[in-house]
Amino acid sequence: MLILVVNAGSSSLKYQLIDMDGEKVLAKGNCDRIGIDGHISHKTHDGRQINEDCSFPTHTEAFEKLVDSLVNGEAAVIDSMSEISAVGHRVVQGAEVFSETTIATDEVIDKIDELAELAPVHNHAHALALRACKKVFSEDVPQVVVFDTAFHQTMPPKAYMYGIPYGDYEKYHVRKYGFHGTSHRFVSAALSKAMGKDLKDLKIVSCHLGNGSSITAIENGKSIDTSMGFTPLDGVIMGTRSGAIDASAVTYLAKKMNLSPDEMSSYLNKQCGFLGVSDVSSDNREIYAAINNGDEKAQLTADMLRYEIKKYIGSYAAVMNGLDAVIFTGGIGENSWEVRGGVCTNMDYLGIKIDFDLNKTVRGTLTKISTPDSKVEVWVIPTNEELLIARDTLAIISK
Image (tube, rainbow, N blue to C red; front, side, top):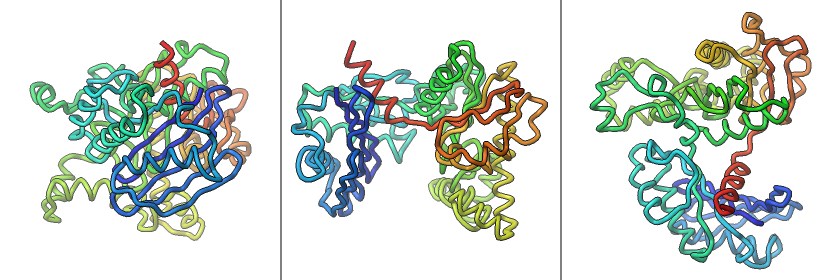
């Protein structure tokens, strides 16, 4: 059975076609610059490629080109779009409305669009893509939506509530939602399998580290707390996002710099984080290159990230009254031995000991990097959100 997995942005359409018999990626690519001019990059499992400028006025034209690339030409992998059994879509914000994967009816798509105020960069784009996909594919092809926030809907009120009047929470739905739920769910299940233990018996801290980063406490297979909040801005310092900051510091800076709320949001999301502190780059690799050249602000940036992750691990261990394993995933988590090593240094009190020599060799492979006598296991686990979306989609349409 073939499932197309789609991750739509306001001007992009990333995709993978996955054969669920063996879970093999047949092709993947990106239709970008939608609404601007248009370009497609498409690559098959055996190395055939397309890189072509196109006209993508809307997501509909992007979907049409996506399907054409899969079916026709030198980089085709199927004979007909009728071979695609379903389409699975990533949706960032499901709020309190969606706590699980669901079929994308017209009513569901409308509700996703209504939630755009909570995720203005993402949800409207998801709704546009879903409607475009329905135009291109037959009504017989199920559209399934998987929500980033759904995994975190198991958080208790004491974890997701803010200290604002309860009536304002009810009226405006301001609370912690958490993100990267699809990734945290995938790697925690992979850890359970690797350890040979039931996920319900484990207490885990999952560290998804990349340009955007979030740390999640997972107990008995459920998210009980996470570092990202009402938006993905909260938590640890990130590529261009500030991470957690005193709300009064935000209003103070806004007054000093004469910024509107929207301008302040853009400042905190796009000008801060690694980029703002280091004054070098938003890319972790470039931060460490600068450190090797003696850059003190780059060193401070790296120190801040490792320190903040360490704090979350300790606090979540306290909340769960124990810790069985720590996971590092995401672009930085899977590939930066420096970040992993820095986080796990001086964590003996918590029972964390890693093999520092082994840690330096691990890049993007499922590996246990803790020592045999470490009370807490530490793992590097590559995430695969697309595969989890495909699995969810298969499960829904197989009911």
